[in-house]
Image (tube, rainbow, N blue to C red):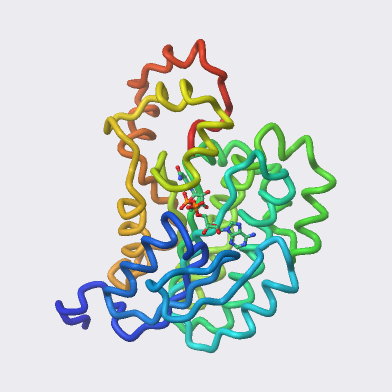
Length: 283
Ligand SMILES: NC(=O)c1ccc[n+]([C@@H]2O[C@H](COP(=O)([O-])OP(=O)(O)OC[C@H]3O[C@@H](n4cnc5c(N)ncnc54)[C@H](O)[C@@H]3O)[C@@H](O)[C@H]2O)c1
């Protein structure tokens, strides 16, 4: 039974946060630190004082991922996979490696150090909406066994990944979580993902450059604004808490009501008609 003075059950727990140097990952690390966890932050850039230990990792590089995973001792109670790239100006292959192939290698390398009752939460995006209709393309990719085969699948399927590697990488996260959560939960490890709507982090200017400021400004937001990084980090912290002990294989939409309003036909996209349309939407 968790005491109410450790309401989310993180006190004294070992947690890993990738992308801890910036945005949602940094917000997540700060919250976990304040909740009494021992935070190991992984990023290509140095993380700040919200982590107890910083370990450099380049998620494009299989050796770097293996080396980082080797430095981390068991037990790991919660893993937050927050690192990501936005799309252009980064290459499609770098986007696929950082957002899916490398992140998945890191997760799989750490799973053997995670005891029953632990949990993994991975940030995807509302940019991955519609992944269920893409399963015939996504399942062969997400079931590739390792970094090398995942990378080679990306290199040999540029037409499937296009027109947006960002959207495809985020669909892949949703598909992998749906597929892999079944085997993990039988070992007592919960796996879920978060699909954020547009969020004010250092990534946002890349979306504005890539899709056009008008497109981003006119994109319907039922709640009337972007999220803050903390408004994404708290639901992520909740997902990995033992308080969510029956939540597994879930895609949690933290989008200010966007998906619900879109599904029920209440959103007006006409203002986007003059803007440059993209298939995935912002974020
Ligand atoms: N900002 C949004 O509107 C939005 C919306 C939906 C989803 N997301 C997703 O949320 C996650 C967090 O993004 P953010 O908005 O906080 O952006 P951010 O740019 O602030 O943070 C991304 C982090 O990933 C790290 N990173 C980049 N390349 C790396 C590499 N090769 N190896 C290791 N780390 C690397 C960066 O150093 C940075 O700390 C990402 O997966 C992003 O795709 C963002």
